[in-house]
Length: 296
Image (cartoon, rainbow, N blue to C red; front, side, top):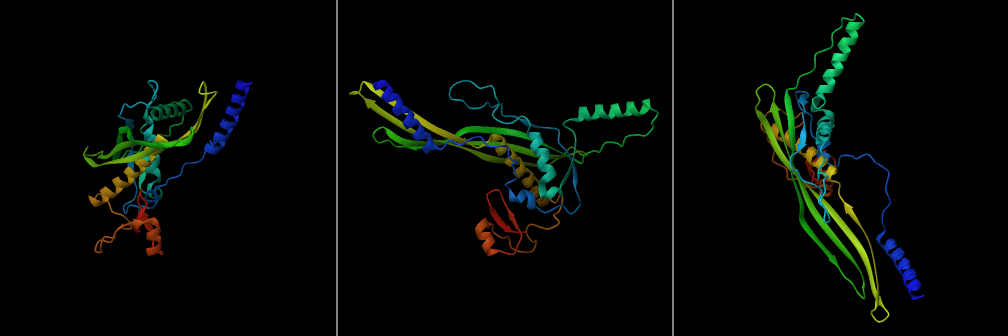
């Protein structure tokens, strides 16, 4: 009877802990939108789009997913970051900056063009395919750092064997990106960016002795929230593209249609988004990834 009573008490306590922790249910997939406002609002170039080629954006860290219990063969960061780079180049500045040509799947493209030529020849069609577009610049780079457990910590408290606890961990991913001229081979621009990844966890513990200390019951429930590493890589790539464009303007490789700061005017100190909206209510704002804004 005592065991039955203890089991029933455990079920009741566990259901109570589950309600306190409020473990979320799986959600349907959603479209991930850009949170970097400057990525969309940066001014277009005055000379038209740049034709760019992306051959790859590789993981140079060799890092595996961190695990406290066993070795993990899964990589810590994505192996297909060039997909995010191509998408970022196509969308930056409302799509006014880069015209991206296919190079990642160049073998497949070449084979398909050969099939088209053979098919046309077999039916006597003498039309020629248009020549493939060449790129003026090559944009590539890689993920050069993934540092886990850069910052860890937690807190907890118990009273009569009952109490909550929380833990957190900070990881950092670092990427580098460069732009190379196809005519001279010169590396025109090179930038690096970092993005932090925050993981948090919370739990509730119930611990109690019964029968003069000869029997004990311990119940624990909790959940963790981990920021996706893939999303962090994407944000870092988008920020690197923005920094690449701004550095190119500073080195006079191109010009903005609308300068970020007037040439002859004072440099305006950026403000937090809320303060910027209050100070410049009618102005169009340029905002960084840290939500620091100033008029365009």
